[in-house]
Amino acid sequence: MADYPVSFFFQLSFPGGDAAFQEVSGLSKEMGVEEIICGGENRFKYRLPTIATSSNLVLKRALVPSGSALTSWCSDCIDTGLATSITTKQLMLSLFDWEGKLCMSWNFYGAYPVKYSISDLNSTESKIVIESIELAYTYFDIVNP
Image (cartoon, rainbow, N blue to C red; front, top):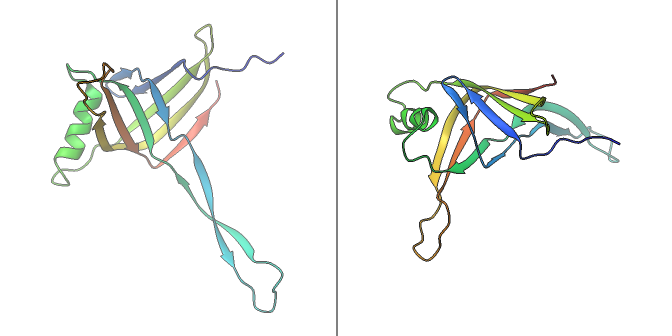
């Protein structure tokens, strides 16, 4: 019987440290398609590949009130507008098995923060405050150990 990996045992590594997150989403890429209509051929359109695109990587975790290298990077990139150049980083998302062995990892190249947000504050609920960090990146590749 196959032993499939679970989705809750993962880690994000970046220059400056590692970070734990409650949720990571946006791991997707797709090939664009351009439709070409050929004169005289009415039965179909040619569908030709164009450029590959990716979604933004969205990271969610409990708010770290003492600050972190990751939130400092977000602040440096977003708060300065474009007055200073954006520092991109290479990130690695690693998925582990039950025994803590690496199953698979994804390398994200040219990543930089594009959005930072905090969950709603509500005095009638006792939820943990969640911070979300959204990162754009140039591309990612899949690394099998």
